[in-house]
Image 1 (spheres, helix red, strand yellow):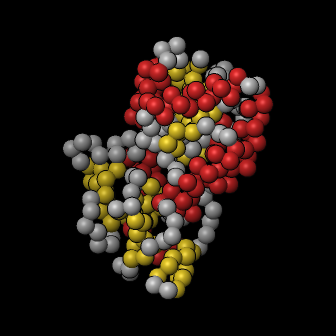
Image 2 (spheres, helix red, strand yellow):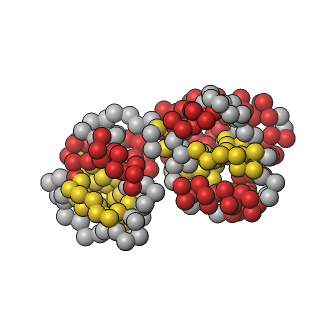
Image 3 (cartoon, rainbow, N blue to C red):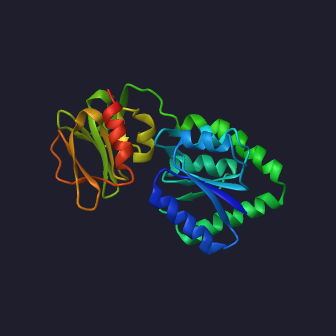
Length: 254
């Protein structure tokens, strides 16, 4: 079975490739694609694989831009929580939740093989109809305000006033530039979809506004630490794999 991995985090992609080989040595990972641009170029010149393992959001866009023209079965590798997974479950699309395990990858492969055994073309048609319907869920809609609950009232907080959003002890905090803290009634993954290109997901715990970034520093482990303009006691780090994507965003953001 020939598989292609679409994943912009290189360590994650390498781990997945190794895991697939451990599960089934006959699996051949023919290519690892790290961006939408790379994927479109690759598939314009190369044959389709039997199966694709794909992240949803890449550094330069959504993997749907690549997948939607291929008509190949897909197993999604996602860090999204219930916001996305409900859509996957409703449409019968296989997924593995990051951080993945050997067992979760094996279960997804088994599910794929069972589905394909019932009629591959029918399964592919179902998946791609679902992809079309799901695409808006992962696009970043442009909204100007976010509703938060404060005591017994609901407040509209303008996006331009939000410095960052972060997760701590399973609770999501929203911090504004005037140093107020609110508790949005949404998960960090869902907020990432709502808050627009002005915000960057620097790691699993933090979404930061470009205007809140004062500078970034290199660490010995080749990670980066991020300084923000609002008081914050925790160290905000960016992995070495994600640093180039972050620096590009930092440069191009208005």
